[in-house]
Image (tube, rainbow, N blue to C red):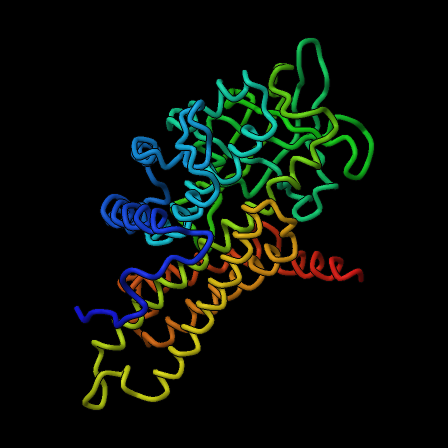
Length: 391
């Protein structure tokens, strides 16, 4: 197979906030992903599922607790180590696999770390880092997607706890989860007031069913119905009626993770396409030697570098403790649409082969299409940015 020309393969000079140590860690993660995850991607995509022992393997490497303190079994590496892992996970070959892993470490467990009691951290965060319990974040509802103020799932106070009734949808890890970090209404007040979070254990009063999707086939995205699900008082996460703040608290990190994953994904399809056009011959020479192909690849490479620069800048600001709302929002907006357009352009350069499963570009295109929807739609991102300008 023809080697990919520099500078698109091989070591790169570390770009802040990454250091030489982070780049060494990147090489270790890449080897693990390419050896332990990528070879199974096609099988798990076809099965519409990946086995839970994937989490066991990741836990054994310390990857489920990279950013968490050592006292809870984490590695104490902070957000930057987590960012390296997320970017490299894009090489696993399956958006659904990356989503299932990412949901556990990136959106389900952070609220427990940030807002949980010590008891909650011991009961949920510690086993989650060990891979013994798998988590899901349950916010989205059939009639409340971007509009979290419209959440209807209710939690009625009863002696010693709550009874939860309602439905959630589009929940990543929704079928396999051992616990759900769940947004509920704890008062009859409308709007953002009266939202709370409960950690709900999987139980007989919860019905979870898997959804069929355009992409992310290996991921168990689910519908969840809570039918008088009992939740003890000690599973109230954070202050009662203050759940909206919990939702907002992790949005920047979730969107940064999506941007990092998109950058990693764009790089993968670019490298694969560069190899293909170097090997595929037409009219007596490699198709990469045609000016139209070279120019298209130049455009794609430029888009990737812009996406990377925006995302790394937002990450630098975030880890420095700055208010990076605008930068994170821009990075999420640009990278998600950019990832889909990059996959589509690379598919086109593969010609008919790109439409075939064998070359995996069609899977990348399907998986990338969720980006402009999930974690806040393009339209919501633009609205946030518009308001940030005082409009």
